[in-house]
Amino acid sequence: MSEERRLAVLRAIVEDYVHTREPVGSRVLTERHGLGVSPATIRNDMAALEEAGYIAQPHTSAGRVPTDKGYRLFVDRLAEVRPLTAPQRRAIETFLSEAVDLDDILGRAGRLIAQLTGQVAVVQYPSLRLSGLRHLELVPVGGVRLLVVVITDTGRVEQRYLDVTGAADAEPTVASVESPAPDVAADHPGIPDEGSLGELRARLNAAAAGKRLSELPEAFGRVVAGVAPDLVPLARGIADLVVDTLGTQSEERIVLAGTANLARADMRFEHALSPVLEALEEQVVLLGLLTEMATDPPGGAGVGVRIGHENRLDGLTEASVVASGYGTDGDTVAILGSIGPTRMDYPGTIASVRAVARYLSRVLPN
Image (cartoon, rainbow, N blue to C red; front, side):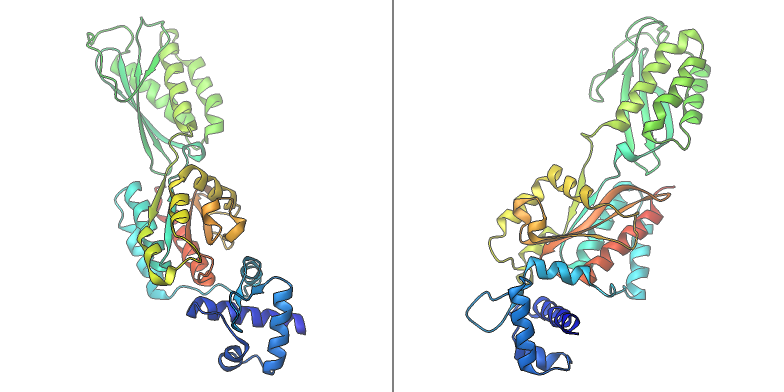
């Protein structure tokens, strides 16, 4: 069938162009690929592909290069994603399992993707908005101040101070982490004794067990309603602070690795490199792009691919982005991916991103 043959011709053009970085001609296709047809037939197929917008002639030579539309068809019709070798899989698992904390895990994941693909890696920190509360710690600091330590189920740790500035029936107010502790007597009535504080901590932790952010206000509300009247203001202040901390959007951040790869000769972009670098600096917009692409289960078989002008960042119109979600218990809590020129090894990049997402999901704190 001519359609299948033309797809085979397009696949051969993409593979050769990715490998050689040179426009591909019909004679080269005949010599390198067993397409089973004459050079004249291949030329006719190339003409049809060019007319349909899948390939283009960049210069006056007979060679053709894939267009964004051609890469898209190639990716959409991939018969299989090239699996990683057994040594590669073992290296990934070993490297990630040796991480000591969340920062180390994400840094290692970024370096792995950059090394496997030879491109730029981007790894989003687990979103606090999508995280659950694993443990809450309350540490008295001074007479009317509590250090509230929030540990999420993805291993992220946030610390906030809570000041109880009035008497026992006053509403607590949140102080910034950097604020100096007030010099107040330790027996100030705003802070309960160690036993009462421990009981409050235990109740809040029990109520939050297995809950996501959207479920916490109701769960904490039951705790506030059940404590002694003199603890209600403090319990409500702690509950509000935890929900606000997990719900904040200002803490979203990403890890970039492998940006030096952009300077390599085989990473050559058709035009200037500076727009790509500028786009990578727009981390908020970049996070939005990755989030839009994360429609599959964490580490699942499907990996999102945006090619060239499909990216809504102007600086990435000559780049492709391959991304996948990762998370715990089947929930996506963040995104990771790889960014390179549209002339990238799509099967290899997809396999690498998917593998790291799967392993990262497995080694995240449970």
